[in-house]
Image 1 (cartoon, rainbow, N blue to C red):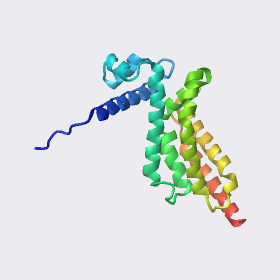
Image 2 (cartoon, helix red, strand yellow):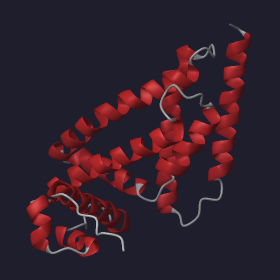
Image 3 (cartoon, rainbow, N blue to C red):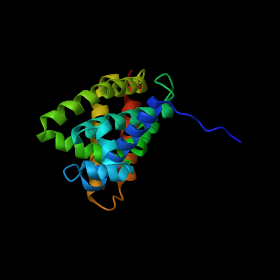
Image 4 (cartoon, rainbow, N blue to C red):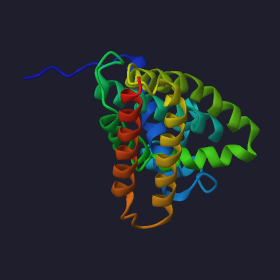
Amino acid sequence: MNKPVHRSQMERTQEMRDRLCRATLEVITDVGYEKTTTTMIAERAGVSRGAQTHHFPTKFDLVNASFKYLLRDWEDKRAAETGGVETELSIESYIRFLWKEIFGHPLYVAALELMLAARGDKRLHKGLVAALDELTVLRQTMWHHIFAGTGAEKERDIIMQMTVCLLRGLSMQGSIEDTNAHEEEVINMWIEMLKMRISRAEANK
């Protein structure tokens, strides 16, 4: 008979915090930021309000921690996909990863909700910007690695920005419409355009 696994207090605490963060993102995705309440989050997580307030006393605390949780999840997926920046990765495979695991994932809607809410909430804006700073550095490092030696290095930052805007826009459109039949076509066309751009740059090196 297998012995029960004993978790430390720190592990149990982290599991509870992660559970609440996940529930927060799910509720925001379902009903929007403004309608989200801590009571709804506790119910979704299957915990008491007392347990919720013990870990996160306010809605802001929950939302701020949940956004950081989402960013960590993105980076965990990115690390699993790439194996680190030393791994050879094509522009096509990276863009398809970004869409499948981040921008096209259902929980990205929660990120959009928080970004929009932050426009009118200075405290939330400050928290989100602080959380995004590290992600921005990691994202730039990955893009710089992908474009290294292609001849298109001078354009990589603007291509990165254009790609993020395109995928974010597709996600926003998908959150409004029940179906977005042209998502794959748009992504495929963007990948082909980038391949042609990189090929011309390599030919002119």
